[in-house]
Length: 92
Image (tube, rainbow, N blue to C red; front, side, top):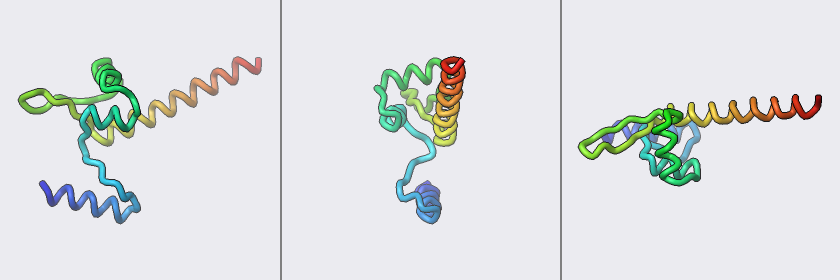
């Protein structure tokens, strides 16, 4: 397992990404990245907007890094669409 983490770190460094981000993020990690509260992050998961899964005996939530990146991309696209619609209606 450690070898896998180290190999991912090496691959990221070779690609010019100096920060190591694990494949699965805790809700606390996601909340920190988005600069929102833990409660807001939990609400995103429970609404189904942010795909996550529970694991372990205590049911810890985890978010796949790729799904987190896709979530951010979707939010950017939604914001662009909303702004374009506002610009269209304000110019008419």
